[in-house]
Length: 229
Image 1: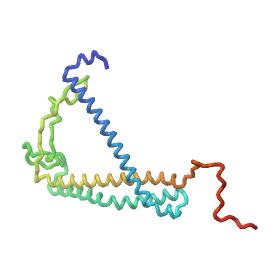
Image 2 (image 1 turned 135 degrees about the vertical axis):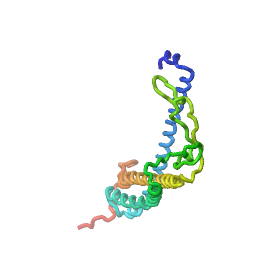
Image 3 (image 1 turned 90 degrees about the vertical axis):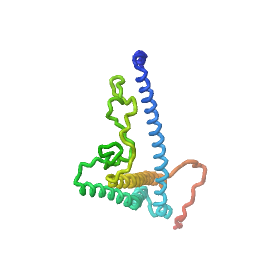
Image 4 (image 1 turned 45 degrees about the horizontal axis):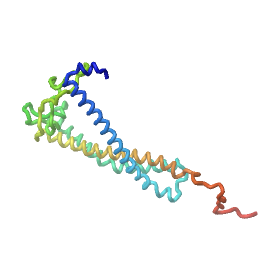
């Protein structure tokens, strides 16, 4: 970075740049931790595939990698359906709830983030009633650094969490979407993990390895030697 540009920056601009750098570093750390957690979780979820296909492998029912992958795919999709039908129903209940609400009040332009009825911390029909809300449209909260508008101060708080009877429909909808959506994503992730595991197993089970093979070892006799003529 050009030191002359640093000299021209105000103290406030320097603080903003340092805060942005810390935010970027923190973002990369969080992404790395989440990535590591997902990989470990998928390895644990993929182990279920071993249980689903163990019988046909140990009893030598499947003879080729293709047969194993085909059998694993059938078992995997059945297990996914068994795990996913409940969260799908929960999501549909949430969608039905918000559709019924819109039909009752005849308002299909519903703002799910609505946080009050025009009076601060009172009423409201959206999930915003249960959240802290800040005015990110406030121009005084921003500054310009090298021609780029960045957040320089935390915006003014315009709503504090409060309960609203008019937003009960939204509460039910959000609860269903969060619970059902999270449940479904976990089930889908497990399905993907088992699919990856099935591909690896199809290669490992039928793989022939010469590791630690000794050329001087006498050849093994066949289990059923041919009878002499």
